[in-house]
Length: 587
Image (tube, rainbow, N blue to C red; front, side, top):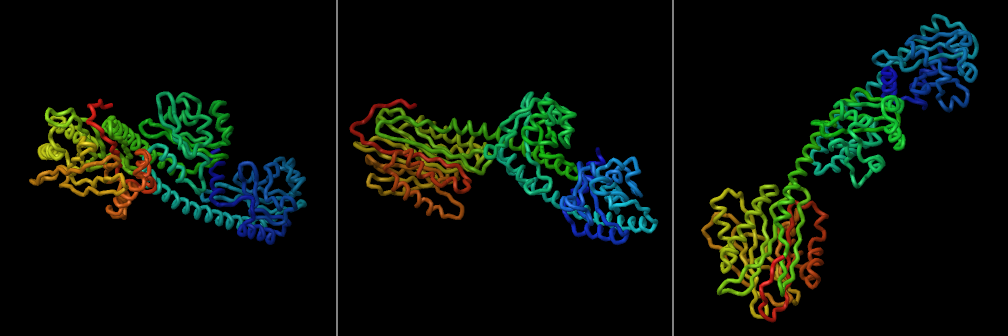
C-alpha cells in the first residue's frame, strides 16, 4: 500500500496522466523508430488504470482515450516486479495469455522496461509492441533500455522541479498561516482564514473543519457566512465515537485515512455513511495542543499524502492551536470586560419634562472594551436648593483594555459620590474632586469628560456644565440652529493649579442637547473639526426626529470605516415646564 501511494504521489508531481505530452510522445516515436514496431507506449500505472502520455500506433478508440483499465495492462507486471517484461508471444505466457490486451489491443510481442523515479521506484514502463510473435534482439533490448533510462531522467526532472515549486509554495503557505491566523478576533474567523489559506493549492481540500473539545464532545466551529453541509448534518462528534477525528482526539495522534476503503476497514458504518453523504473519501485529522480539539482536512477522492504535505499540515495545525488559545483567552477577557462595561452603562431615569436616549458602540478593531461611558442620575433635593436636579456625564478614559474599563468605572463612581455627597456643589467641583484623586492614586493617564447638571428654571431648564478636555457638547435650538459649546478646561487628571470652571445656558422647550465621545467624530485622515461640523449638520437636519431616530442618523456610516474607538452618545430633548415637578424615582 505504501509503495502504491508513493508511486501515485510521484505521478502527481510529474503532472502526467491520460493526455498527450510532447516530451513523452517523442520517446514513444524513438522506440517505434529504433525497434521498428507498430506500437510504442509510455505507460504509467495509476490506482485503477494505465495511462499513455506518450503513444504511437494505437488503434481507436484507445488512441483517443490514451488509457485502458488494468484488465488490459502488461505495465502492471513491470511495476509489480520492478523488472523488464519481454515476451515473444504473450499468448503463451501464463501472466498475460488471458489479458484483454491480447484480444482488443492485439498485444502479441511485448518488450517493456520499468520507468523509475529518483528513489528507483517503478512508476510505469516504456514498451514496444508488435501484433505478431517476435524475437527481440539484444541490440533492440539494449536500445530500449537506453531510451527507458533517458525517459526516467525526464520523469525525475519533472518530479524534482514540481517538488521544488511545492516546497516554495509550502514555505509561502506557512508564512501566510502565521500572518493570517494571528489577528483572528473569534473562532469563526479562525476557520474562515484557515480555509482561505488553501485556495488554489494543488492539494486544496474539499473541507477544512475545526472541532473543539467540549466535555465528551467535539463540537464544530461554524463560520455563519459559509456553513458547509457537514456542519449542518453533524455539528458534533462524540469523543468515543468511531470517527477519524474522535480517534485523533482520544489517542492524541495524527490520523490519516487515504480513501474510502480505509474508512470502511477501520471505522464505524455511521462514520462511513457520514462521509459518503457528504461526498468525502479521505481525511487527515490532527489533534490540537493541550487537548483543545482537532483540525480536520477532507478530500472528495482518494488522497496521496506526501511527507512534505503532512509536515506542512501538521505545522499549520500548530498555528491553529495558538490562534484558538489566543482567541479563547481574548473572548474570556472580553466577556468579563463587556459585563463590566454593561454594568456601567446607566439605565436612563424617567424625568418629567425631559426625553433621553443613549447609544453605545464598542470599537471594531480592539481586543478589549474601552473606557467610554455615559451616565444620568437624579439628585436628592438640597435643603436650600432646587427641588429637582438631573446629573448627566459622558467621558472617555485613555486606553482600550480591561484597565481602561476598570478606571472608567472608578471615575464614574467618584463623580457620582462627589455630587451625591454634596448636592449643592457645581459640576466643576465634582470634576476637581476626581482630579484630586488622580493626583494621589495610580489611576493612569486620565481622560476627558463632560459633567453637567440640569435644573428647572421658570418655564425652561438651566444647563450647568464643566468640560475636562472633552469634545464639545452640541445644543440645537427649537429653530434648528446648532451651537457648539466650546468652553473647556484641561484634561481630566492633568497636573495643574488652574481651577475648573462651570458654564451655563438656558434651554428652552424643544432644545436638544447632545453629549458624545470622540469615537463619533474622529476619522482617519479627517480633521476632527470637519467631523464635528458634519455632526452639527446631522443634528440640525434630524433634530425634530425622535431621539432613537436621531441616534441612528448620527451613527450611520460608522460601520463603513474601521472604528478604532468606542462610541458613547447621550441625547436629551427639553420639554415644556409648567411648574416645578415633584421628585420622580429613577428606574
